[in-house]
Image (cartoon, rainbow, N blue to C red; front, side):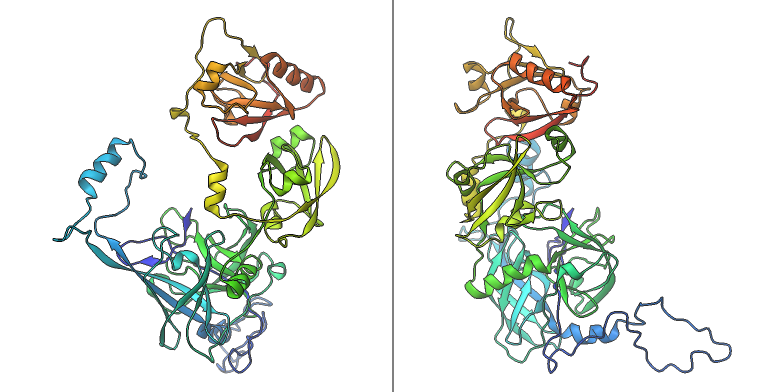
Length: 537
């Protein structure tokens, strides 16, 4: 997967496009677009003249998008940025990690820092190109965050220039940006400009026509058409899902609008999925209902505030759901709870399944993080959970989400690379148990705790071996991991773990739910299949 990044002169990044839904603008500035399905035609003579075929589009399809494009295109802009970069500091093909001999060679011989006569690094000016669109007559412009930042999304650029469809150019001021959703708001000093407005994703259907307008490869004012291929596409977005379209989106389309045929911005083009970096019909747009609240906050205050619950969550996949006896994707399971956070104060515990917030169900298309993020900070909302098979409701006071840097510091993630983590030694006389799961378990001794770099608060049993043909191995369990609970019952000895698994088998359960931890990383839930494991491991 590639981010549809802006086109950078000298360094080619993946190109992205942003789409936004538009309602009817000021008639004097942005005339209403023709209704979807209208068959606007030019006078080309009699359609049924002798010897001429009567060619017409399918019912409901427009003969042309030209009238719609003519009204929308003036509101789409080209965005260019400049930034000083150090000469020679090109990206490493070996991942940038340390300890890799190829990486060390690249740093020493292939990527030297060039210095001038004064001993200072030599720099050059890099230019990046992308797209955007006007949302007001006085010059507010929406684009992607990655269009107006440097190689890393926290680096500022030196200048931002906006070129209008009529050829005029303006310096732009960055009003605010949100890396989490990948949107930014700019302002130019102009009035009487054409503009468009956001639409409503709830009115967008799979199969609807959409238009993408932008500046791929610096080819200004390029229009492509396609359909909505899918809605609520989860490709890793933190606070929402994406609209998928087959309208061509390429490098330089980043930040441009995706329109419906009523002229509404229904998305912001931002990501392409491609093995080559070019369009293959898999483009993704930030939906209007995700982008607009962020833009409104940036316009009002220059920053974004989001609700926060203080939990680490996991999707309720098929195996976890089966272990809990719940329908798949009917909620999300709490993997950990921040000790002093809003969820903890509300009584939410590790292993609870959150199925609803403020009256809205948590589903595959309506995930918990966006639901919490949009709640008003300081408000008290009902949260419906499933605990031990029973539904209960707790009241939670929404806090403000900390910065991403603070969250990372609070998380305190350790090294999850098995090659760098210590493994339990296979010693004669150590306690082991076979748990009908294809794994061998042993007690968590003080020596093992030290070897595995575990905090004193971590309790459980250690995986000493995994049968590679077992379902446990397929689910990612490996030697050195700690199993903290099975079927939401804490385990501290191998025999206790085996008894819980045996009890599950006797009850006819097909899977067991394990809370597993690697080093000091956050624990995660894994559903492991019980079927066919009796003779494994």
